[in-house]
Length: 283
Image (cartoon, rainbow, N blue to C red; front, side):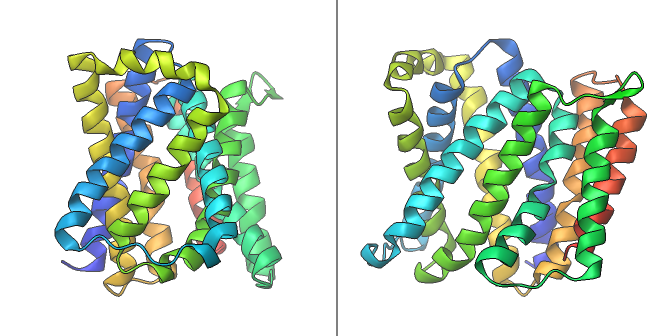
């Protein structure tokens, strides 16, 4: 399977997973901590079961402890913020604002990896900020809602953690082994932040709710696996990143069809295009 097919599969499954998460969180006022723990642990379990067939392997983790702590904390906060964003904002808006993760990855790389910011990347940052403003503009004023802020925070934590992934994944024998760990550790940390959320986990044992959660986790697992496999199959960052941004447009379309998110549709579409342009310039 070519890297292009893999990244297209990741793009589609990521968009579907986002829509399914919105549906789950719209049906009830879920506890984001309990939801985040259950969702991530279920995704980790799915990936772990698959990794057993390809050879699950854990390297010596002691030298990696600082990076593992960063990965655990930032991905836990990412998931909390993302779930809160889906609870309080439209899925299409979350998708567009979450695309600013590319900006945070570039900033993190400039700070921690000493990668220089050139004129093209600065223009890309401006485009992403402009796209965020377009999506957030309401009634002749710019107003970031609570959901918008959570989406931007999610993009910050994810974008920064993703830069850390580039270092960690090279120490693991294969992608599934790393992803099983990277989903499991943040889920445990998330629950430790608020132990009282443990009692709400029983809500997800309901058969219908569990099936919905399982399908959502399955799509998320496929999206995570295929995007890393795309890199391993010969795709480069310059090729994969712009294509993966197509998930923004797809989520806007799916949100319109399945969630009836019709408000400010032209702003979401325009903001999505502007953010995609900015993301491409940042590469």
